[in-house]
Structure formats: C-alpha cells, structure tokens
Amino acid sequence: MPALKYYQLKSALKSLKKSDVSLVYILYGTEDYLKNETVEILKKTLIEPDTLDLNYSVYHIPDKGEKQTGALTLENAISGANSLPFISEKKLIVIKNIHKLPESQDELLEKYIENPCRSTCLILVGGEKLPKREIFKTIEKLFPTVNFYNLYESEMGSWIVEYTKTLGKSIPRDVAEELARITGDELSDIKNEIDKLVLYEGSKKK
Image (cartoon, rainbow, N blue to C red):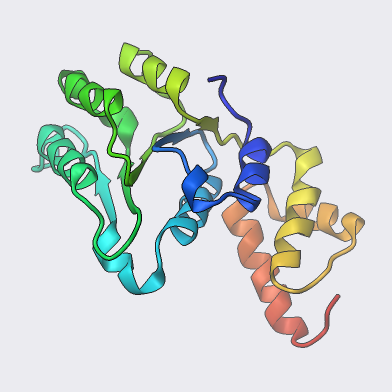
C-alpha cells in the first residue's frame, strides 16, 4: 500500500477500533515525538492498562558495537510476537531502530511478515530513512508505512491548536503560530512549553 502521511494516519487512529488495527506498522522519519505518540495511541487502543506489563514489549536493535547482537534481539522479538496474549485479545510488540537491522536477519523478519500472528500488532520503528532493501519494500507494500517528517511551518499552528485542545484548553491560531516561531520546530520542545503555559494558567480555559 502507498506510504501514508502523518495526518492521514492520525485521522484514521481517532476512530480506530481494536479489530481494525493492522498486524504490522512501520514508522520512520525525523520526528521522533510523532512516532512515539503513534505508538502510545495504538497501545491505548489495544491493551487494557491492567494487562500492559503482560502484553506490551519493546525491543531495540543495537548498534554493531554493543554486546547484544541484532540476531538475538530480533529472535526474542519475533518469539514474543508469535506468543499468545495473556488475558487480552491483543498484544503489542515494538521493535525500535529497525533501520539498524543487520541484512543477515532480513530472512527472519521476512518469515514473520509472510505469516504474522493474528493476535499481535508489531510496530517497527526506524530512523530518518529506511534501508533500501527488499524486506522493507515488501513491508511497505503490505502494511501501513508512515514517514514522520518534521512538520512544515504552515502545519505547526494546527498541531499546537490540536494538542492544546487535548489538555482542555484553547489557543488562538495566531498565538499558536507565534509560539512555534519562537520555540522552534522540535515538537517535544513545543509540547514542553505548552505544558508550562497550561500549568501557569491554571483553571483558565484560554
């Protein structure tokens, strides 16, 4: 399927039912905040809070210099993905730094992609770009793939307005755009500034 844009996925996630969650997602791009936000939304959609420790696992593909090998990490992750959830309909497995996956492990991932566990959602989180290898092309054809780029200046105001609404507050569009201008384009930094403003304003709605 064609690669999705961030707002296309965000719109779909708003009304996403547990039964409609894809078996596999691949998230990559420069904006880590949006990738992490998407993982959190899927986690809340799929897993009940009281079973989170039993049905949610995060794995990291290490750098070449680290002691743990990519093979061991991927084998553990795939084993977890293939196991049944505990007291839950679904489980969530996240593999971070998938762009660092050694090419020698492509076949192991490909075997899982060919027949993913129906009770597991596997999220593959990459860096700025994905390796130009057949396994990633295959995943992109079969499952939702999203490039989380840094939002354009024209998109920042809308994001700030939307995020502020989730906190039960409102912010005028021109103020949101000014906040983006003086804070920069890192969403995590902007979020922190909004959180401070909300705390400062207390019970005020605007």
